Length: 224
Length: 253
Image (cartoon, rainbow over all chains, first blue to last red; front, side, top):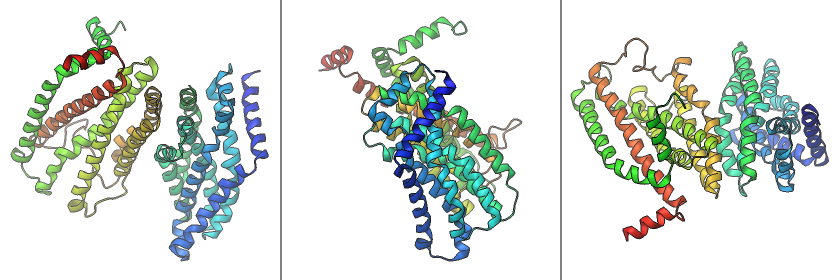
C-alpha cells in the first residue's frame, strides 16, 4: 500500500468509527455550548459586559472542549492494540498519526465552527466580527488538535492521565488563545487584524509540519 | 568527533559511568560550595553596600541582584534540561536523563523567585503586583512548563520511560524560550528592555554591573550544586540494585 493510500485509509477508518459512535461528536459540542451559556448566568447578563468578553469566552470554551475531546484520540486504539499495528506498519508513524489527528479535528474541531456563529449571537457579538471569529477558529482549532496530540501521546499509557494532560497541554495552547482572542477583539472594534491572522497561519503551518514528529516519538515511548 | 580533543571525549565517556560520576561529584562538591559562597559574598557586598543608590529608584533597585540572575537562570536551566533530555533520548545515556530531570525542580524554583521578586519590585515602582505584560506572562508559562515536566515525571512509574517522556515534552516547550527572551524587544510593554546584553555598551554603570555579573555566576554554581545533589540521590535510587551501590553501602557500615 502506498503512503498516501495508507494516510487516507487511516482518516477514513477514524471517520467511520466516529460516525458509528456519534456521542463522540456530540459531547464536545454540547460541552462547548454549555460552558458558554454558563458565563451569562454566572457574571450577569449585562449586554456591554458580555459583548466585551465574548471573544475570550468563546475561545476559552473552545480550548477546554478541544482539550476534553483529546482523550478519544488514541484511547480506543491503545486499548484494542491497533495503535501497535500503526507503529509496526512500514510507513512513517508521523504521517499516519497526522491522518489520525486530521480525522479527530474533522470530528471534534469542525463542529465547533458550525455552532460558533449561534453562540456569538447569544453573547451579542457585533456581526462584522463573526467572519474573523470563524477564520480564527478555522486556523486555531487544528493547532489545538495537533499540540494536544503530543500531550495525549505522552499520557496515553497512564491510567489516570486526564489531570496531567491538562497541565501539559494548556500552557502550550496559550499563544493560540492570545492571538485568536486578540484578533476577534480587534475585529469587533473595526481594526485591521492581518498581523494576528498571519501569525495564526504561521503557527498552524509550523504545527502541521513539526507536531507529528514528537507525537510519533511519544507514542513509541508509551507503547513499550 | 574529530573536532573535540581526545581527553575531553574520554572525560565525557567516563562521566557517563554512574560509579565514576558519583565518586567524581563527591570530590567536586566542596569546591563548588566554596566558590559559590565566595562569589555570593562578593556579589552581595558589591551590590548591597558598594554600589550607589539609583537616582530614581533609590535602594529598591537592589532587588535586581536576585531578580535578574534568577530570570537568566530560569531560561538557562530550561535549555540545559532540553539539551540533556535530547542527549538522553538519542544516545540513551542514563546520566543525561538524570541531569535533565534533576534540573527541573531547580529551574522551577528560579522561575518562581524571578516572578516573586519582580512582583515585589513592581508594587512600589509600577504601583501593581502584577500586569499581564508579555514578559511576565511568558515567564509564568515557563513556570507551568516546568511544573508539567515535574508532574509528568511523577506520573509515570517506570523512570526510564518517564525520562524519555519528559525529554520530549521539554523539547516541545523550547519554542517558548525565544519568545521570553525577545518579548521585551518585540512587544513594547511595561517590563523594561534589556540593559546588560546590548550590542554596543551596557546601559548600566560598571559599579552596578560587576556585582550583577558576580551574582549571575554565583547562581550558576548554586544550580550546579543543587542539580548535582539531586542527580546523586536520583542515581542511587535508580541504581539501588547495582553492585557498586551495594559495595559502597556495605563499606560505609
